[in-house]
Image 1 (cartoon, rainbow, N blue to C red):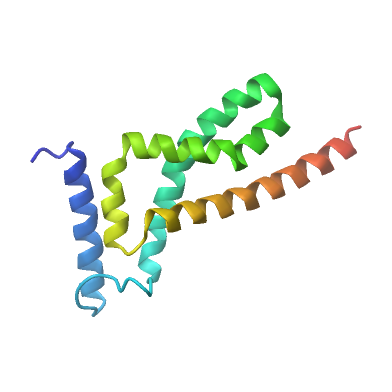
Image 2 (cartoon, rainbow, N blue to C red):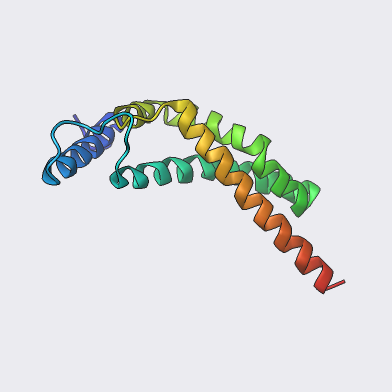
Length: 134
C-alpha cells in the first residue's frame, strides 16, 4: 500500500498509539471508558483539522460582514461547516478516533464547547479594545 494512501496514514498512527500503550505497560488498546493522556494529541488533531475548514468559512464571512459576524459564525454555523468539510474529505479518519474510544458525537461536542469558549474570550477582547480606541 503506498504511503500517500489515507488508510496507510491512519494505520501508521494507530500502530504508533498501540505501541506507545504497550510500551507503558498496558495490554491491548485504550479502555473506552477511561482515556489516557496519550489521547490528548488525537483530540487536538481533530480540533485543528475541523477548525481549518471552519476558519476558511468564517474568514470569508468576516470579509463581507465584519469581524463580529466572523466570530459569531466561527462559534455557530462555521463549526458545522467544519464538520461537513472534515466528513467529506477525511471521513475515513473517524475509524482512528473510534478505535481510541471516541464517538463522532463526543468529538463534535468537545469542538463546539471549545469554540464557544474561544469566541466568548475573543468577543470580550474585541469589546475591550473597541472601548479603548473609541
